[in-house]
Every structure is written in C-alpha cells, then in structure tokens.
Length: 67
Figure 1 (cartoon, rainbow, N blue to C red):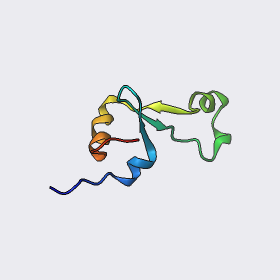
Figure 2 (figure 1 turned 30 degrees about the vertical axis):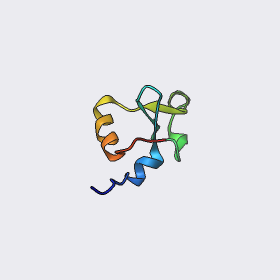
Figure 3 (figure 1 turned 60 degrees about the vertical axis):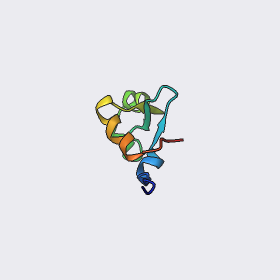
Figure 4 (figure 1 turned 135 degrees about the vertical axis):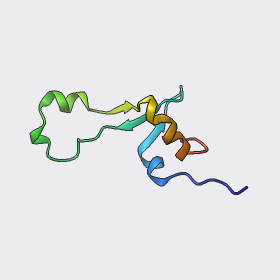
C-alpha cells in the first residue's frame, strides 16, 4: 500500500492538543474589524478547539497525525 498524503490545508490550519483535540484559528479576524465590537475581538483572540462533529473529518485528512 502506498503512503497516504495529508491535505496541505490541514497541515497549515490545525494543531493537535495533548489530549487529541484539534485547535484552530478563529475566523473573521483579518480585515474589516471596524465593523466588529470590542467584545467580539477579545473573545475571538487566540485559538479555539474544533467541534467534535468536525474533528473526525479533519483527522481523516491527516492520516498520520499532526505535529
């Protein structure tokens, strides 16, 4: 069997935590921030944990795990 390739977008956008959850950056923080209030910007600072329903699909795109 040949080796499976990891989706290049998944390599760039997700990291695994020590417990196996997936971290991702928050959307909506690149431009047009004048239209968002301060609470939105503060709450979406940093990274979030991916929802359980989406985790299975992303892990399938990274067959050998993520660094």
